[in-house]
Image 1 (cartoon, rainbow, N blue to C red):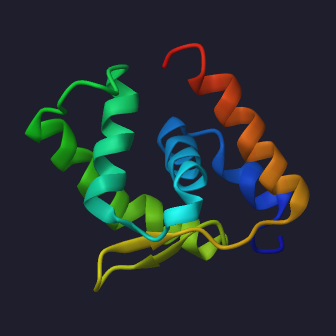
Image 2 (tube, rainbow, N blue to C red):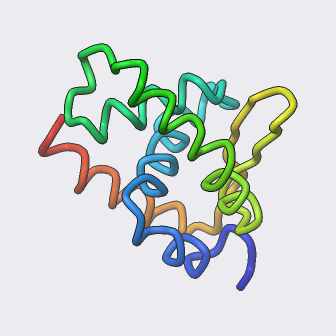
Length: 115
């Protein structure tokens, strides 16, 4: 499966946390790369359904650990994120045009009604 393709996006979409990572990076694409901590806070807030409220430390730490150990390395291998564990920076490479459109459509559909 080509990196950054529709297939690699589809392979990652079944997990809500993966979707939130892709949505966040899409949302911040103009200012990327993001700091891992900022990404983890945004994902944790979306998971709690309270993006404008502070995230409890235990929720933030659980998301941070999962992203750094599991999710980001996997998404990086699929060509969907650029993750540097030493600097803690997470960016988004260019996707294929259909993959880009898919992520944007899903983000608008899944996040807009709730936030």
